Image (cartoon, rainbow, N blue to C red; front, side):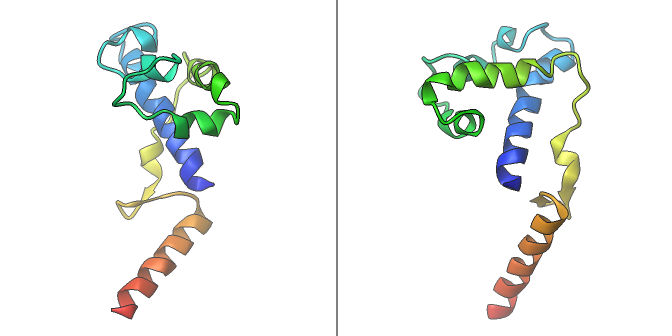
Length: 112
């Protein structure tokens, strides 16, 4: 669950960066972003959208609309950088997730 939540937050944060910095007023206006592919049924081949869309809806046809709503509802609000929550430079998640990840890492190290 942590991975999905943070991935979605990170995607939103990245797509809103050009707006937050004042380069454009709407995320789809930034020409170097994949955002237009995420909010359109026709996307660029290089952009994989299904995972992110699946986090917003189980109906793939609604993916672009739901993702657009998710991103644009945050326009004008102050978003926290999701990478500020990175623990020890490499683990992103809540306390339980971090504990589990560190335990797994410890187990992997001692098996060698």
